[in-house]
Image (cartoon, rainbow, N blue to C red):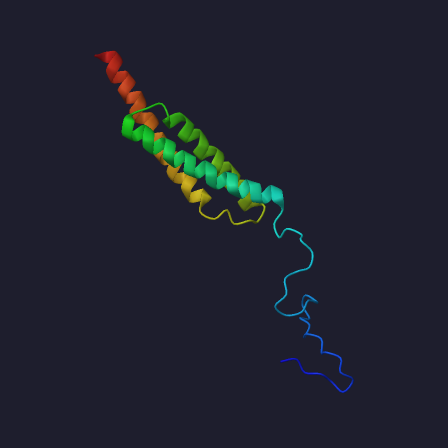
Amino acid sequence: MTSYPENNVPLQPEQNPAQGQPYGHPQQNNAPLVDPGIEKDLKNAKLYGILSIVFSAISLLIFGFLSLPGLIAGIMGLNLSKKLQASGINPGNSKTLSIIGVVLGAIAVVFWIIGIVLTVMS
């Protein structure tokens, strides 16, 4: 219920001194909270981590050539995560995803090389 002072003018909502905005109201300007370039790097780092895990896991299951793209995607994801971390931004779980992808990709590459060597020797 709105209370009115003696001159019948509605009271203004209480101002938040930190923002200068009324409590409960969003910011009036539509400025992004995060730089679009950084947001893109965050998404790409996570995407590279996921791709590296998927490619490396598939290559382990079917002994395929996808181990190299998985390894490359993992390295690219790690580089983006390190770049974000160096600029003071938390890369989230993208670094972990990329590390897992690199490890799986490296194991798959080793198995692929062993398979080629065994095929040539037989």
